[in-house]
Length: 110
Length: 118
Image 1 (tube, rainbow over the protein chains, first blue to last red):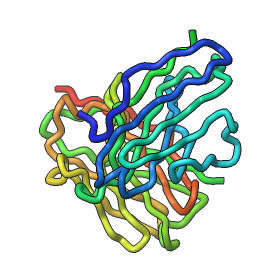
Image 2 (image 1 turned 90 degrees about the vertical axis):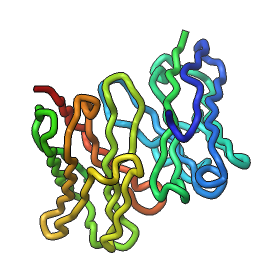
Image 3 (image 1 turned 180 degrees about the vertical axis):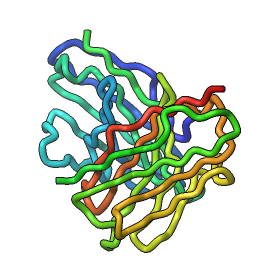
């Protein structure tokens, strides 16, 4: 069981906007930054969002992150077929003194 | 250019000790704010953080695996080593090392698949 809770799956059609949630607690999301990763099949995770809502250079502005209390969300607008991947949220957990990941959300572009 | 590469055995037997080496370039683990973590991913499953070592030699371990893990660094060789004792088939996974730093300094190796089987 992952410390951060994500829906196992999400889907949308090209052009749509989809949102993936990530629920945690006061010791992780509630008190630390949230990071989002995209993992394409057979590849290492790639950073999409850092510090809750910041995009690294090169990440399209179709990807956005937000955080409220002990929950966070990743939004993908203008969905494209190449967005089909697994998405993970991550945060530091003060109680565990370690990094925690969500269980991952498999995004399908219909 | 930042690169990280994991190396180690592809196959280990149950009860054996796994030793993985992360060799990196493009950054220094003696620079303030830098760290290297190990993360693993069983086939078809989620990412699991294992351990982290900081530039100042602070170390952090997964609470569930703490008794089995040791992380160390050799700054002169730009290497981080992870050992995991008493390997079990459930430890079969792709093991990644990743370098992290300020802002969006976030680089991962390609991962190495370790299979635990007799």
